[in-house]
Structure formats: C-alpha cells, structure tokens
Amino acid sequence: MCLRTVDISDDLGVRMVEYLNQISSIPLVDTPELFRLTTFAPNKVIPVHNWYPYLQGFSSEIVEKFIREGKLNSDSTILDPFNGVGTTTLTSRDLGIKSIGFDISPLAILVGRGKMIKSVDSKIVRSELQRILDLRRAKQKLPDHGMIGKGLEETTANRIVQFRNYIEKISDLDTKNLLQSSLISTIGEVSYIKKDGSHYRFVENPKSLQFDSTFEKNTLRFLSDICSPRLKSRNSAEWEIELSDARKLPLESDCIDAVITSPPYLNRHNYIAQ
Image 1 (cartoon, helix red, strand yellow):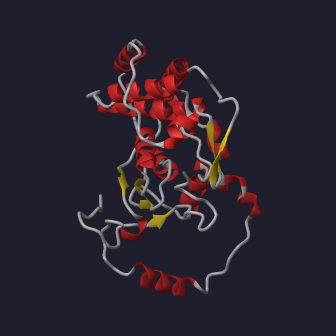
Image 2: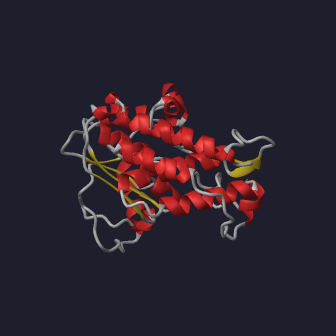
C-alpha cells in the first residue's frame, strides 16, 4: 500500500515533541466505561481473535468504536505500529478498511499474519494434520534456551520441534499459516510457564498434558472458525503486517488516516524477560 523500502531517518524525538505541542490544547476525557474494552478479555470469546490470548492486548470492540467515531471507511488506511497479535489489523480487514501493522517481535508477526487467513482448503488442512499426527516420534535438536527445559517436558519439546519442522515445509501458504497458529497456541497450553504481566510464572499443572490431542483440537477449531459462514460473510481489505522497529517505520509520508494502537507499557512490562 504505502510501504517504503527504506526506513525513515527523521529524529523521532523531535517529531514527537512537535506533535505533543500541537495537541496540548486538546482536552482529556475520562471514559471509565471503556475500561473493559481496553483489555483483551472480550476477544477471548470471538473466533480467530481468541486464537492466541494476549494479556497486553485490547478488544476488537474498541477498534470498531474508534473506526465508527473517526468516520473511517474503505478509502482510509489505519496503522498500528505496535501490532501485537493483530487486533487492529484483523478488525479493520473485517470491516473493509485497509490496515498496516508493525511489530518488533517475530512471534507477533507469525500470530498476526496467521489470524489474517481468509480461506483454506479444508481437505488439505485435514490431510496435512493427519500426516503430522502420524509422524513417528524421534529425538530432535532442541533450541539452546533455558526456558525450554523449564517450561516443557522433554518429550513434548521434541514433538513441538518435530511438528514445526514438518509445517515449515508445507507449500500451501494458508495451510501452513493455520497450522503454525495452532502450534503456537498449543505450546502455551502445554507449558509449565504462564505469561503473567511483566514476567512469567510457573504453574504446577498446565492446561493440558496431551500435546498431540491438544494440537489436533486447536487445528480443527481454527479450521472451523475460518470456514464458518459468519466469517466468510465478513468484508475484506488490503493489509500488511511487517517486522519493524516502531521508531523507524518504512512508511511513505501522509499515507495514514488513523492510528489505533496500545504502546508498550514503559518501565512496567519486561517484554524480554528470560
């Protein structure tokens, strides 16, 4: 849409000060009734949005509210420079409005892009799923990261890597994205480590101890979400989700009509906690 091939080199600090000076006269309005909508909780019951629960996220409902109040339409382009798990881009796409999302986390990019799947061939997904489940268990080369040993049973970690290696070779992109999304979601359910605000905490009993069956269940649920008549009837629009530092976004000038985002919680959440 309006992406550049090079980063903007302007001084971010100078531009931010100029912007804050321009809006200093705008009054602040207290809206406590929107509190719940600024959390991810409402998304937990919405298909596709609930594929990957995200504590620092916000609801699709508040995105819809801002779109209505801003009178944005199919000629508009919305930016989320801290795209996270893609609530802004997915909601905008479903409302027929162009969107661009950036995030510095490769995991967020995978999750965000996975949610943007519009359609899949159900037969291909089911066929690939069965091939994955039929893989003969074998020891894998695990990532050299201490959290692997602390958060996962060794047999589960081996199975995760085995599934990932197979999925990466799937040629059908939509099928690959759906299975990757299911794998990422399943890891959270079988892990002894739980995301908890600024840090992680250990739990005695994961949500599930059966990795294969949980992966199968999630994949079939995701497939059902994508193939549901309700989702197929939604609008569609151009979108981009790219890996980038929000301080150096590769954007053309004057191509964004609105920004809907939730910036990182400075000095509160440690996004790289080990």
